[in-house]
Image: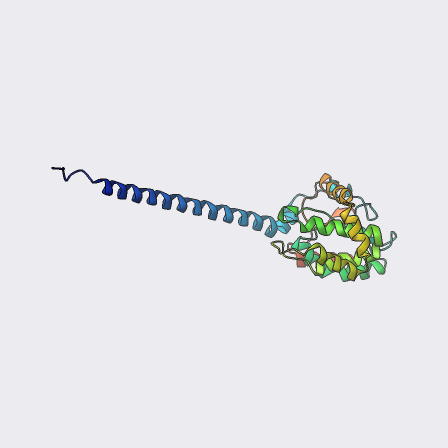
Length: 251
């Protein structure tokens, strides 16, 4: 007669199945927790980079030595408006995906254009690719801007520059396609056929890299970075303050 203290084969199988199912559930629980923590960490890092970018830019130790090494308007790395005999010079390092740059442009681009026309300031906008880690838009927009400037000149490039900021996507996406950017370039007056041909031929990439690397060589690592009359301009704890104080300084 079989002993009742020993489980039957069916009972053993049932217990093994239950233990396997419990182990699987625990493994799945740990994996979900790992995925959640990973996502939270990435989101937090991005938020810190994006949300804290302007604070870092305002608080970092911008030295006069670094600013004095920044080439004045008229360099090979940007778009210049205004006369070389203007009362002031202003260099603006910007990224087409940077939300702070977008807000700064919204608050200043018309006023700076007017001040440039009045001979009060010569401005050079220097697009750089700092936020390429968030997607392709920063590099794509900068490349297309560079090519438009090469093909169609400064006036059309300035119009395209302004349209890029007026239609700036969120840094989280979704990002405009090449066709969307072609449409903006055409709206600015660019030759879209020539632009497409040069993009397909991978032209302009070296120029974009040179401009970005030139900024990094000067230890410029955030946007917007402003250099007014050879000195770093950081007068403002917010973009609103920075824009207002800059325009006041140029009057």
